[in-house]
Length: 339
Image 1 (tube, one colour):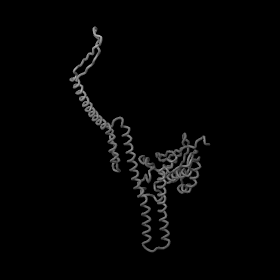
Image 2 (cartoon, rainbow, N blue to C red):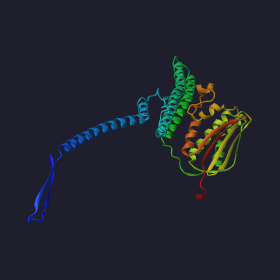
Image 3 (spheres, rainbow, N blue to C red):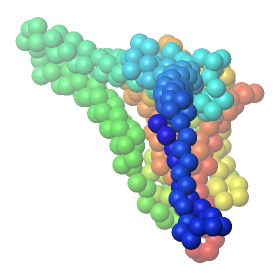
């Protein structure tokens, strides 16, 4: 192979210019360029394969925590909710993701445990009155009896039926609350008037045991009157149940910034610290001896109080020390500019 060029050459004694040709043998150079081109293609291909392999290894190593999250999520079941992703080998970029995932598992574990306990408690609470109804009915049907015996049995059955109705009503209310179906009205409610009205209702029960009822303070909240009646009524009923004779139940109302605090304090046996966080759980009772269920109380009162307070965007808590137990709720105050 040759490369060449031509040029016009003017001579002194010639009228016409001459054409000069120059050629060079470039065969070896072309072979070198062709060989170099193939080596470059092969080198680029090998480099691409090596880069892809290294990229795959780096991505696999970096995304290993994501694979662990996927594996844990895929293998999740009721019996593996205690499983967590270890944080030792997690890169900094994924720490927030793994931490959030572990926190979600913890919440699911707690919710599942509460749901399992709730199901067991429901079965337990419903078993007692149903068993009583069946036993009373079987006994009364064993032989012919006087009309007075049948009437007495019906009254006894009525108590158990009322208890069943109370349990079912409470469960339905809590189910609505869990699904956001409890929507309180927004109106001005004077808490002192609500408490005084409830005092009139509970006064006869208090007089039987010599318990005194007193209320201190004022405060208007932005809420639903019917729900507030039920909320405070449950707290007063709970206080009357555990207050010793000839003692005083105190209700205190006071403003706290843009909230109104209402506390119900009663003397009596202190509640152990380990029980305080679970007082508002459904069917939970502090005294194990009471877990067989009293005929009138199913353990849903405080759970309903918490649902009602949550529906009002408030808070509820309990403190028990020095022989006194105090339930405190905080509710949004009625805005001053709406007066």
